[in-house]
Image 1 (tube, rainbow, N blue to C red):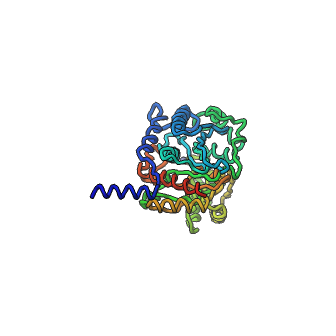
Image 2: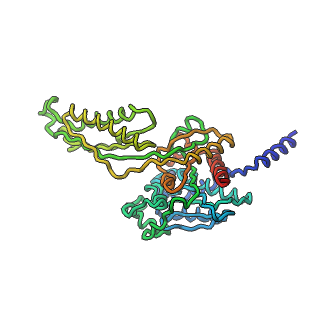
Image 3: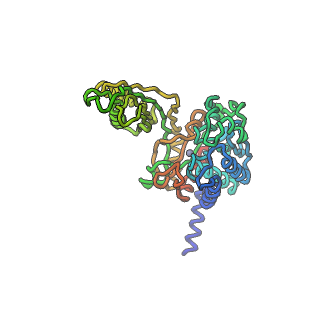
Length: 424
Ligand SMILES: [Zn+2]
């Protein structure tokens, strides 16, 4: 009976003909990379452009070569592993992620997509599958410092961006050079729309939705846009003992109302937009002086720029009311560090969803509240993202964890989506 059952299983497998990824191999690679970049006091410090980053990249490039890829580094310091397709006329299908981390970060953010992408190549090699399209596995440089490598590839990186100091102690300019790129030629790292057939990225969710709802796969519909404002509230600094309560122009009291107003304004609209006041300074900052001035922040995120503008307008309106009743001045200055929302390709989303269904995984369509390389790649090609659960919704922390089975599920979806795209 057992024998017949095994035989039937084998037939079923051959009929479906779907190669599967190797969960143990993915886990082994993730854990091996995690050993690189632990500093002298035990922190996880594989930040972009550090010595540990270079060691991690060397380890990864070794794996790429062993899997038969032709490995190069572009002018932006991105690692690109190429695999030939049957039809060189077709534009490559690209996929990948990043292996740099935030200071004292986790071992799964970026790494799951990097090792999942590598696993796709391993499985194709083991099964002697040559795709029609050429394939490019890309490990982007300095994702955590502002998607530097993918911005360069999308042609959106400016010289000012290269001058920015990174957690490694090197500027992006020097870091790109240290990692084998050439900052002077970085504009040549840019790809044109149409150079790629598509870009796919597997990533951990970095939030708690999939984990809480016990779902296996997230089909990402887009990456939210982010806008920042510096908010100045001007009142009048005066003696805290001699100024009666009804004669005050207390900037911090108005700021408290502003913080509440932001929260209420954001929640007054339907949707998943989020707004945060994360920074506040009261001046002059003394026990016995009524605060005369407050510098605060405002951050808004949503998939739609129009929604962000609408929520901001509502906040401005409520702030004007507060200014009037509190006898202060409130002004907003938009800081130019905004990122535009990036929508994923609807056709690719449908393919990811169909593949997840075929493989029997539970799924949900969702937005990404965190930035990713895919948001830059979406400017030059059709892009799609696959999320897997982060246990407890924890990310950017050494406590970050994704189960090996979830990593394998995500890699299987990545593999089958690539194969489906290849049939186009
Ligand atoms: Zn990431």
